[in-house]
Length: 318
Image 1 (cartoon, rainbow, N blue to C red):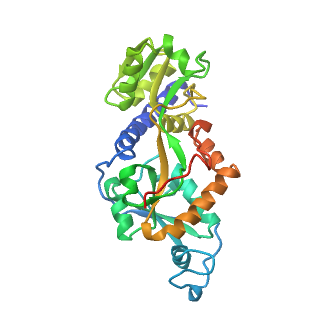
Image 2: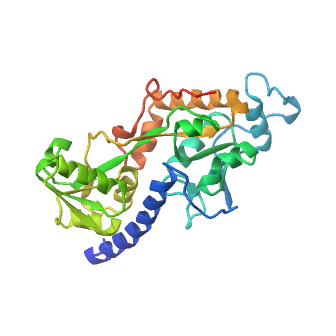
Image 3: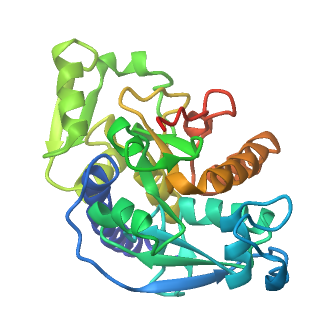
């Protein structure tokens, strides 16, 4: 095992990277982020069944499936759009693979639908729904919040999972519920929505005081080093950090109900309602058989992020 100082160096580098990811996520998933357009794409094979006989395809699709699913099977590739955000849907720079929570979910959905491969096309976040409606991709999978203004532009699948703030505590902490924060010093990062939440809690007497840090790196290390009792930050990014670096003797407070949750789904064009129904059927099957929860757990997420079939139904506007 590497020495502690090497682990701390690795942690610093990892958290700097994740801070940048979290910053993009805060602006990206909740609103339109300014990201540079990139035409990079990558193809990932699934375990799906081979594409069917293209001669059997019609404008209505082969018997028992949507026209889009038939078309995708003929191509052998499902093309999804993402702005390349870790840990959600991104191209791993070391392996070249399509990785992340959303990536694993969509690859499993594709496999169950009999699609051989999934291709990720990198598109700036603010252009994702535009490119979807232009027909350059089949769907958008990028930890995108299901919001009313977006439902005016496309359909959304049922909820994949929910996301919100998380509370990070030492592994041996006596803190077990949100109420236990009343006597603690809570760390938060400058310039984030999570700092605003922490300061609101302090004003309401829900935490003793707030300690502000300039970087996500410093924030996590402050908890690990005992400078603060806990910290508030992006829950999924924090879970990913802890899963990647076991030198940090920290954990997410659980059970914990986030106060500002976003519900994540994938976007599909209005004209592809039948394909939406096919994706939703598989997604709900994954919820019921436990495979979706297993994916979340593999990324360090607890049941707090899981949304069941009934409560995860998306009421599309059109």
